[in-house]
Image (cartoon, rainbow, N blue to C red):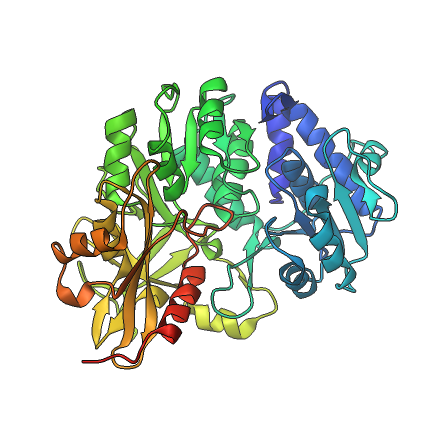
Length: 518
């Protein structure tokens, strides 16, 4: 048997009194967390949920998430996490595509969640979840607190096999409707085991800042599942707020932080009064970490950020720079144990050192396939290699580097332009907090370059300043045709900059621009 829920039971038996979760002044021990998860399993079984069922959950980073997540897994069913920022039509796609029969939704998202539930015929039960003192209204949905407290806390975990689907994670859907990546119990177990023992290296009772959304692969595997396997303590944040995060790090003596690059940039821009001396490991993923942020964080806090790489389809970790490795700024490290990575040319052959091409991955971390989408699966997994859509390279020592997203590549008049190269230069400007570079349609050259910039607090920077700065440091063909300064760049739930939103904005600029001239 290999069921992720079994490992929560094991940890609860070995370390019953260690704190599993913290949400400000609310604490749950491992014994309590495991008992609540078993109660969820019983209430789901009473509703006909079992192997072959799929259960959706739209829950923020509160103790409810692991309770419901592991409760679903106990029954042998598959978890379908839903992005808490989604609105009705987006949620409907998740529910209909997965054919989830039960939907847990936090009461803060009631309006869109309930509307989506009503538009998904296969979904029979809507269970509304709220804070401890909240009581569900019967006309809206079933009361989670009532159901869970009337369920038994004894449950015999359903035996599942290593290749049974544990979780369906829907990809961001930058091209077409989101696809459901089927991750098996073994995919998730081994990735979490490796993360907990070789990346974050969490010890029993050590505190992990858990602000990355748990419905996302990074937070789910590298924080929640890894902490459960190692008896770590998750101090939960439902949303990232810079000063609140720093306060929690100081208050709970956080040992491990795992953030996306924009969160590190915000921390650099915060006040100096916080004590971060408890941090012994800082992890970055989800997007490329600008070299300037890496250096500034090391200089200011004395903390070396270790960078990794992965996707939802890879469970997610594929590469990492371990604490025992040489840190090469800009590198995503080397493949983790049991994973192979190659750089694939357009003709399907593999490239040598320092040659760019598409990153291809194979190993124990690769998804089972896209749920009920064989054509998408066949396009993504070719000859056993998962094609990531990322452009990368590796050096003579086997360190890998992401040059850009394949779809982010800008081709201007036949010249390949990698946005990340321009972004790295913009990040060295002393007034810039964050930046993103995208392409926009151009009738003469195919595409033009547009740069978006947000300034640091208290700093003033103009589009002309950025243009002049780039003109001094980059070849003319890479110069942005347009630079726009925004108060803040649009971001998704993990804090990752939403380039697709900026592409849409750039396309509007293109429509309003006069015809290109030579």
